Image 1: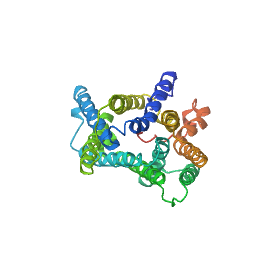
Image 2: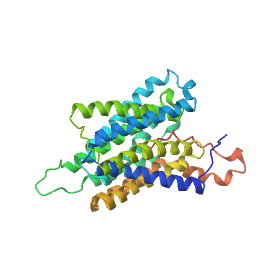
Image 3: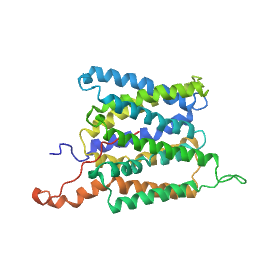
Image 4: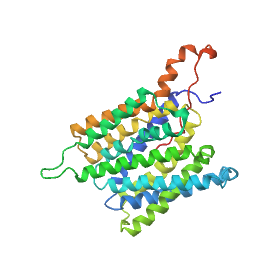
Length: 326
């Protein structure tokens, strides 16, 4: 029996706040980039947040559930999480925060494709494949944003946008890996710990080796790192997991589409990111495609609502995959 409940006002308000925080993270990285290199920012925030989540695991006595079987899956998701944010940190040096958040949040499309081929219960419908096609058309249109006169097709901005897509692929692969490993049955904070620890270790090493370890702690840099560590990496993700444990994941997933909208809005407002017509059109197509792919459970649930008084006539609704957000 499904113990999770539909979205109420409290959950809606909390989810909107979480989406605003997630949308602001790319802007926060970009704002502090002059003082602290983006790669080092993510390594630092991930390391501090990993310690905080680790302490939470100990205090909540999760250690009896943190068995050796989760280590293999933990290493995989840690590497994939690091790869995602490696792409983000490098990509932000070439493209705007508004562009990055749109391309990064195509991840549900790639996750849906991977789950389709891995689990029979996650097969995509024709409508969902239409949504995937729309999302890919949107990516192509957004890539068409013109560069400076004399530039070739491979402009710095398109390189950054491509890295955003690579980050989305890594994020989607992380979701599939969790479903395919023992982490699917592990406490959510443990999965978060593996991701944060992997990002801290790998990105920290890469930052030092490549010389991207610039660190000048100004007021803006300190405020940005505090926001990314405490508010984003720790509090917002724990609130997200709390919501997942109490409300229907498909409904929360639909609300999470607000994140890229917040990201674009913050980028334009705080950083003055330009909004070119091809990018706006492409972004809208991407968002519509993601909504079609990820909102299928919600639409199906509404279509069977008239039959809820007679369970025998109500077809089963597949469980949404264990969601994951940034």
